[in-house]
Image (cartoon, rainbow, N blue to C red; front, top):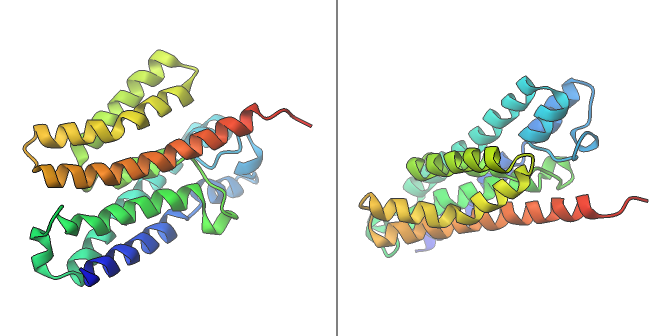
Length: 216
């Protein structure tokens, strides 16, 4: 268990450093703008697309999702390299812990970037990317739900995101169980997804509070 704990902590750190890459801030700077001073001030794809162009917003979305996916893959590699093979049959499939921790680190890094004064985005794209290597069907179903709710509730895109993220862990666990995954695997992944959801919901709450704050 010591080796799997080490792999998990290292994966969390690697994921955080990777997720901290401030994609929107750096791309906005190429346009001579500060992403924190345009629109909502959020370092994410939506704010970038609305204020700096759709093409730049799509680039931010793809790169941010890629950060999350790469973090999860690196977490899996760390787990395989540092943990004994016998850990795969341990309780709760403990070899899932490093990739889940790496994905969580990526979302934390995106939301509180080390390279941008601990500012960041809300983490939706990073969370979606982190999901793809481990539970792609659950991630795609959740993305489809987000699109449907966004169309139904527009222009209240924030509400659509909050509803989707709140349902995210339940959707993933349900789909995993339905597809034949063991209870241990489903619950382990579900706990990791719940951690992602808490971070994303927390960032939405902070953004909502900032938007409601009266001006000077």
